[in-house]
Length: 296
Image 1 (spheres, rainbow, N blue to C red):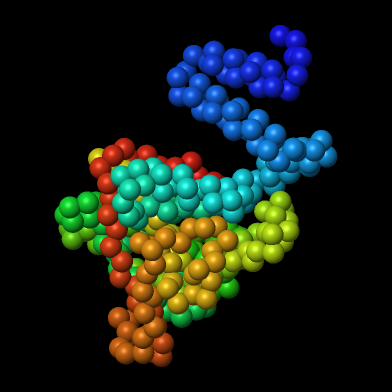
Image 2: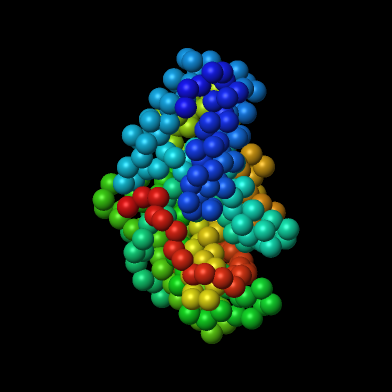
């Protein structure tokens, strides 16, 4: 094919995409070319801007390693991660859902943890927190034996993999829901934190005059055969940035009540202020499949 003009170029590219044998890949690539070419025309993308965009995409790959995923970070900062989540859950976006972002910090092989245990065995400082989470099907029947990963940031806003090796797997745990569908554990209250800003994502936020912070939250991932794997976060209603999450992750269904208390705590060594959180998740019927870990 010999291209005569810019409009013919799009026609040629679409013709090639339409020859793709796999029907789903053909659908995706045809739509991608249609919208991508239309975008270039709409904004009149300059050669310099195109070169800068290619360099930015390359840099995102170069900055992605065993402990950091710049690509996932960018997808969240553009609202794409949340959009994909909401379109694929809650009756294809028609109803409320507990599903949420996986985020860039989930790891495989969190330490097996018994209900009621402390996921902060290394003793990271912070306000004591006691969590109870219930897992049911959409009709409200408890789900026993769900494997539930929990992970969170510390009181300084860091995940253990962002610190030195002495903190390995701290503030992470893997539970099994009991006959009532419950898990419970002790931890510390997480702090809202800024996402990494040393790369392309940080430059984008600065150029848009956006802050890089996420509100305080807990991560949950629940899996059991016969149910779609639940990936979720529960956000602190009192966090000052609950309305301006840099990753567009907060939905009304996932705003939790992290209750600040001063009455008698569940543990005798706790005096003064402590936090309690009770939250119920609903799992939809479907395929049980773990996501691809964003970090090692």
